Image (tube, rainbow, N blue to C red):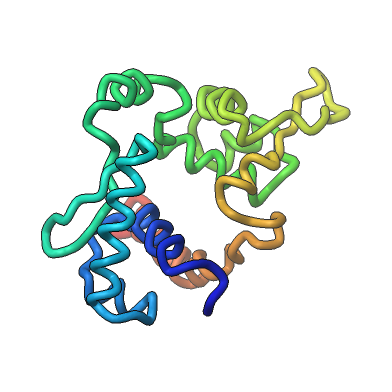
Length: 189
């Protein structure tokens, strides 16, 4: 590999992991011995302490992870209540998916696809910078149409909308949908 130093690679791995990584796995991935990994971990721990980083290295549950520094807790608590840190609700995620795949799309079309009012979800997505108004339809009331933004692509790690997975991979065959609809009709059971 050799693109970055083993220490840089180690820090990057520990930054993105969601679970503690055992020393043996780190050695395998970094292509170094377990002893070398232990030296790299000690170096990383010293480096973090020396530069007064917002992260600390901990050995937990049979592996290693980076954690936020305990002294940063008051700031993290404040940040967790800010608009930037909030996760998207299911409604917002559904709405975002409709916009991503159907853009440019009007709110009325989003509502029809989802079967519920989506105005709040669209406003949230606009506020977070994931969607934006892309124009107006030449219809009574000139409704706005929405599309995704560069921020959307950035957050999903995509270069363009062409990188979205094909919907066909997630849609059941027509016969299956027909049989479901049949069982949901009165007297269909």
